[in-house]
Image (cartoon, rainbow, N blue to C red; front, side, top):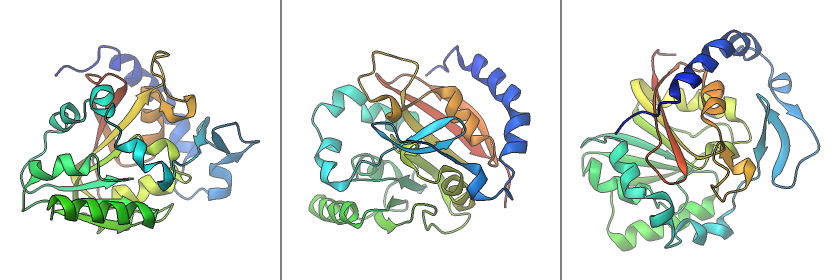
Length: 247
């Protein structure tokens, strides 16, 4: 599967932004100055991070939307799983696991020796996940109740952290990514799957979409190196980074 030709443009953007980001997003910078607050738009919370308004969170009452039959056609989840190049025994963190729609597809790829930490901030979602995995006889998915700033994962333990249409909802994106990076092994990967903001034909609300350049920009404060962007899915970017340093 080939990288997008336009990735070169994003790399240039990342380099140009790096000086600003490194200064503006100093890890010691107080949270109160890291974010701005404005009047919320219709689908947002009014909190601004690096020029982007954070979207509202999809609650557990909308869990049925995650399991909609049309999702197979709209998002090609099995193709996504192939893109991730998972190996038997991998430790995966599915951040914002929801009902386990993606985690259940990852499960056979990593086998009995692997584990998926299904991280949620809503206990109701974890209850749905637990019920579904028991019904399907899946034993390598472990639900984890995280917080809005911390996924509550063991340090230096994760081979791949995946976020499927989730990152744009983080109310504290800097803090969450900081703690996700702590959970990653050096050389571990982060895969952000986001609806493409650059594509007006993607029928998703604007604040629930992200551009490739914005994702790269928001990862620059962290010990992550951009690896590749894959756009073989109908609606979504698959943007992959690697952890390049320890804490």
